[in-house]
Length: 258
Ligand SMILES: NC(=O)c1ccc[n+]([C@@H]2O[C@H](COP(=O)([O-])OP(=O)(O)OC[C@H]3O[C@@H](n4cnc5c(N)ncnc54)[C@H](OP(=O)(O)O)[C@@H]3O)[C@@H](O)[C@H]2O)c1
Image 1 (spheres, rainbow, N blue to C red):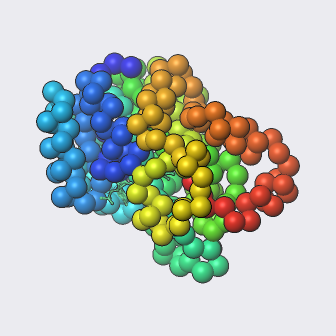
Image 2: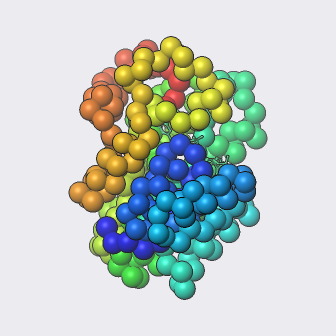
């Protein structure tokens, strides 16, 4: 993967911060996108101190029309080409669909689905004409199955994986790579923010975000279109893809979407 500018959404915490760090370490200039300006400035300061690269910040709420438009405009700017896009920002609701509000469900879809589609579209114009570039869409192993509570979350991630696989076929003709990254449970602030108690999850099931990102970038270089990191989640993904749906629904009665 050539160096050039990388834009990472949700770059101030968890998996997105690990992507920004790794890409900067590999020599990419980086554009960090998230909502909280203070955290963006702090993350940029840290990366500039650690690596000899340019770090830019772009505050945007990607669940809004204005936020999506601002980041899409940056991605489509021919004077500042972006070589690598990581659509990472996403969240889940820790509420049964029967108890959540339509506003919250729509906010989730705008971030997890609409922003991914729009930013992928904005980035692809320049990438295909330059015949160079890569897009990683952070999905989830939950997208292969069903999960309770939070029904819209696994559905949104099923969309991300399917969408990425489809667009990857069209983009390959222009030497542009797309990859859906489908992690399992990864230690970040994500579950705490969603109000999910994960204290009962055995330690060995947790993934480390730095290792996850290292393996994801290796899979991208190898030309994988769907990357499921770590052997245990490869088994989970294989099972979810091949077991009868009735068995999957029984197993999902009290799962927390990864
Ligand atoms: N952690 C897991 O176990 C796990 C497993 C499978 C898949 N995933 C997926 O991996 C991705 C990253 O998860 P994570 O655990 O690293 O999350 P996280 O620790 O909660 O970090 C989320 C990042 O996204 C930003 N963000 C949140 N809402 C945003 C919005 N509306 N617009 C722009 N930026 C926004 C946050 O910054 P601000 O709050 O400042 O905006 C933060 O930088 C998500 O797509 C998630 O679904 C996570």
